[in-house]
Length: 289
Image (tube, rainbow, N blue to C red; front, side):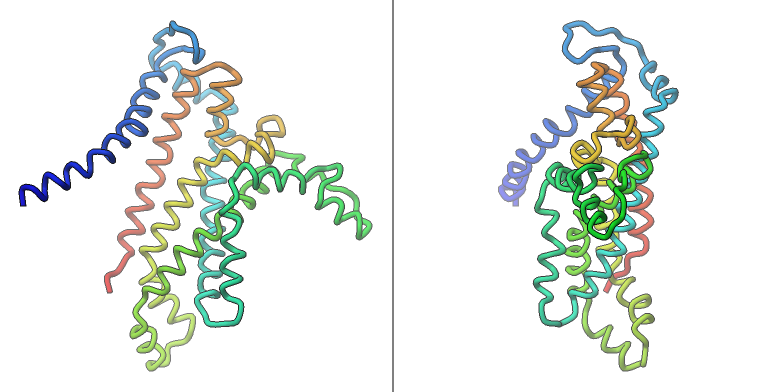
């Protein structure tokens, strides 16, 4: 037993080293950097305490980016889970071509977010954009799809939801296939309708999958970066920024490394404060079978 315990401990050492090197150390270093005024490359930096955090609450771009981040997170999570579950229910049925449907829905996730943004960029351009060319075929005038921050934010949310829809489908499909058939058969014998079967049997037994999908999509939406870079560049006038992209601009463009670190720390706590209670709430809804 002692030898087995030692072997298990030794096997965990590489994982512990990676967690410390790539998660714990950067987090601690980021927190420490947030208390300094630093341009990111100078050998000297000045301690300013909580000034960076206080500046964030007076920063218009911070609040705009925060609102966009919440839209990307909650909007994408809602769309991905609702449509992901509906498609999972569809492809869980036996019909000709269901494997093709699964493949088509899952394919966008195999493309990087940056490439997906570039593809859609050539669709939404005002001059020569694919969507406007299609409108021209029916005699309609061109539309400036990314004219306002609200439009850009909505399009980015839809693109992100579409790209990761397949992930939700796979999670829910795995959950549906693990539900014991005896419960569904008993419901059919008792004369329970399809809606009653879904809300009283399928959905409660699917809650572990719901928890996984919701938390995964929520955190992914809050950290959204690559699609925004290639699709809108944060525009127009930085109105479609997410906090992740704003951090990058502060560090590399504005040379405000300390302030960027403070925004990063705030983003970390925002994600934690929102995702933790949602995770706990969903876990309480899970049932054993």
